[in-house]
Image (cartoon, rainbow, N blue to C red; front, side, top):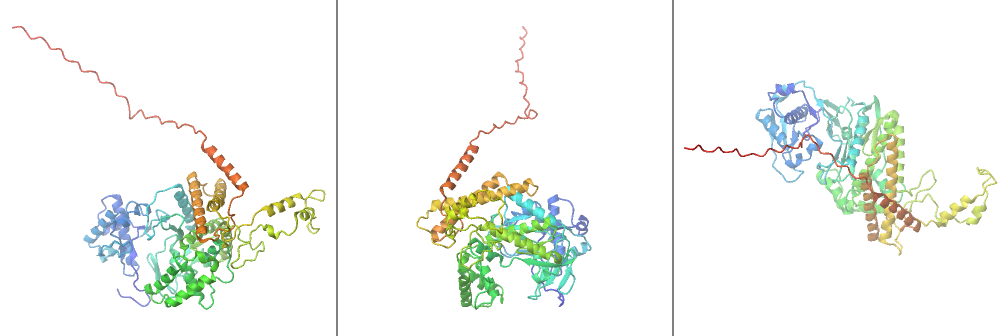
Length: 619
């Protein structure tokens, strides 16, 4: 293939795409029979259409496909029952025997990341598909579950997965109504079904397949529904400088993001707030600091972050042109600069932070839908039309503040006037007893200020402030993250306190979701989902208590080390009510009446009677 200077160079192979098809008349024009099993015909149609679309892209036209059975095992859920190992390989064999495709076989490999075989259309197939229309087939499942290697996994549907699917289907319905136009200017090359864009930063070309309407797929990782969960759409493949060249509702685009989203969430989890710029470290480039900090969040050890940075240079020469000593020094400086969250660095927190970020992203999309604001998600940022940029930025700030408050209830509020301090614990919204220097009696008799007259009038007593002050003085001080555990610390008591606090937050969220469902927003959590969430809260509490026991430091701030007598009494009362409700006799299950049509009683056959033998004639 001859390349011209204006065209992007030949890139990677296109993956086999099962989301496009064409009319059967073009299949017949290529000399292929239209008789056979409907699922086999559907698979062959998608393969031929994918080959033609790849050839029209002008980048070699090669399409990679797998000849491994384990690759096709979970495809029944994600791509439909038509795309099985036998049907795909049978279609490739048939098209190859007819001279419609060229094939290059790869050697078998036991590794999931090995080389795949590839095929491409011949001139005979392209001639038959001249001027053929392409029809897009949307994703059959908008949520994906992948294992630790990034491979798709089959899963069984539950109430939780069905609720996740309904949520993403609602988001896709709103995104599908957003008109997005790709520009036609320098640096953009449009071919049928493909767009090539030159990056202004690196000068490399990026090829993507835009869909007719914006759609996203939510992908979870490591076989868990509480890890990863980011939303993926085709516009995310565009370079950042090119995304703002899109036209949304006929206007130029505007992109707003959460600055330092993951480090901010880590500080909130630790009960601390950063001071100054997060990526400012003396003696180092902020870009290098950002790369080191974000990398070490996704590794299981601190030195693993160093090795991951050095691996960049090995995989892509020039991506990290620094020595090992420089990288080690940079990592130590980053740990020293962010000492309040140093215990969370190199702890594999990245995949968990992605899930929190994805929940924030979904919430922003919901709020934008209520205000009729078009927004395309890009992980920690959103692309919208320029006239709605300020509104989207405000919504993102509200969601970030709400998420931080949900993670750590003692997080200070800017409106309350609590200044943040690096390395210090977050101030509680309720002042501790030590800060009350005024005696209770003086507070009880103190009159309200003349500048703010009381609504109660002069004739009423002022006993409520005195009661509130006594209650505040009797309340013990909450633990601070990072402080040494007291001598009275007990693992069982601490675990019980954490379980009660975490499960209380889960029950509050369940009540909020149920109230929203009663008002027409979403669906109320089922009994199995409530039990699952409470069990997860208990497991998290046990992990946090074990972490405190192993480190000797407080990990969870704002939760007392042990429950008070009143809290234990309330807990026993709640458990007694649960046991009473569980022991109530349930109505007996009415047995199903058996069908009388299929099980008709048969009449007893008459007994056979012996035929009487006649007497022989006498001779």
